Image 1: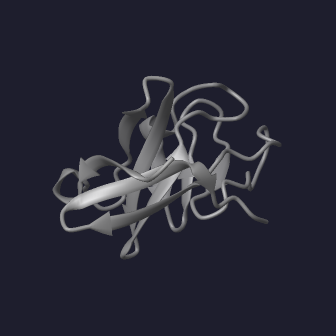
Image 2: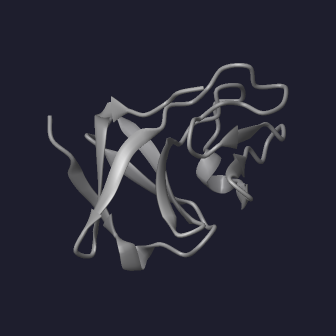
Image 3: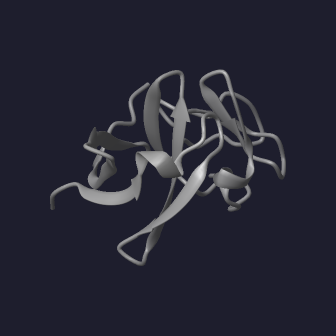
Length: 109
């Protein structure tokens, strides 16, 4: 399956996660940070709550419920209580559109 447009670049505010639903089955948090765009699964692997409700600090996103912090580029948890990574998806910009491919994960650590 090919990448799909999920939002406009103008929808994004630096360091403020933007939740988008993809294929009616998956919610992804789109984050503009440090001149890059990240697409990270919008569900904490520990608390099963929306990461898009958390804070972006440095190159991470923090779950508001229990404080687990995930690396935006890899999805790796950097502290407890989370021990499992979340998926990070390939994304890019075409014109004013942010495109992601939920079938192309870039998780690596």
